[in-house]
Length: 49
Image (tube, rainbow, N blue to C red; front, side, top):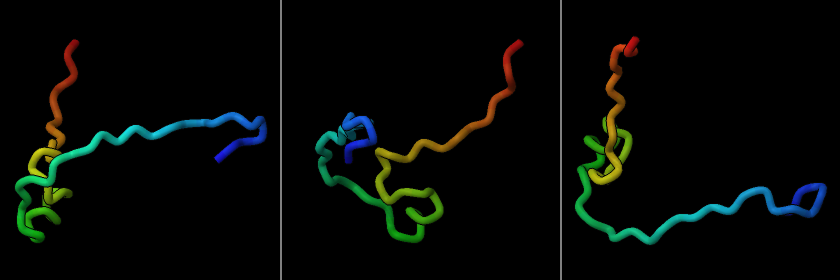
């Protein structure tokens, strides 16, 4: 889509991925993805001083 100044604002780059192992739907729902390769849980840490 072109903006007011006829400039392209962004271009998405999505590399091809192989379809591999998946988790069952219930587990994928609780983890936020059915693909183990994409699962990266947030771990809070204390701020270093």
